[in-house]
Length: 305
Image (cartoon, rainbow, N blue to C red; front, top):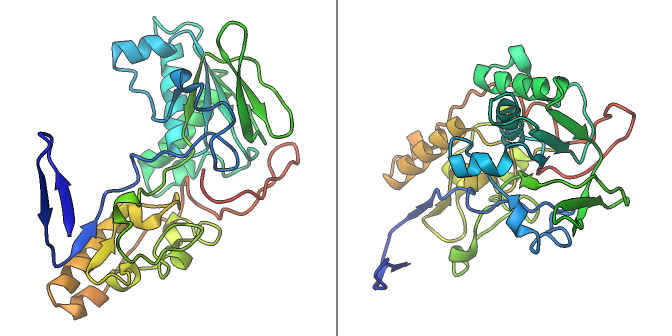
């Protein structure tokens, strides 16, 4: 049963033989706190925090970051994109003085910026190289081993980031939090789900995508059986099926949906014949285990963000 509320306030109910939830994780961004919970003072600082890569083509958004000191929290492709956009703004005519402070919970290692020219997805490799150039050219400074614990207001209204080890950064004007995404399961709470307690992915899929064991390219083929739940006819597919794991590629979702559609049509032979060939190098290459960054510090933190 799907309960629907329309924009004009009308309500309706739709009965379905099956439900494919491909709603993704985009609406539910992770918080800035290094623990996975919001940092102390994060909600109070909401006026200076964004949880999306800013669209600097919008004049109002561009004015918000131009000439400002911005902290970017995160280590994935979204963080790379933000660093590149801010570097481009700094080099433009209206962006003089724009500077980024890149906050990483880990250190910088040989794989931090991905596969570069060896990446089997060239655009992804180019993004990592552009982010590295933003750092090398001085448009962004990297702060490693920093697990955000709190936000405090400076006397001029700017934000001071405080780490769990007591370190305090110089004030920043804006903060962009890009620490991963999470599935919204609230509208499924009357259905019988079977999810891994760590990744929030279907239990039969979770060990196949565990980022402590798998990169984007080592996820084995999987389909309707791994995506099913005790609630008959319910499937979580696409990025939402990966829960908190950050290693999803769209081509994985396409094959998931093909398998589920075949199963619903009664063609179990086609549904069970799952083929998937993924690129093995890139931003998500390697495992989520601790790495030894420049300077010798290590961080055995979790997978996501």
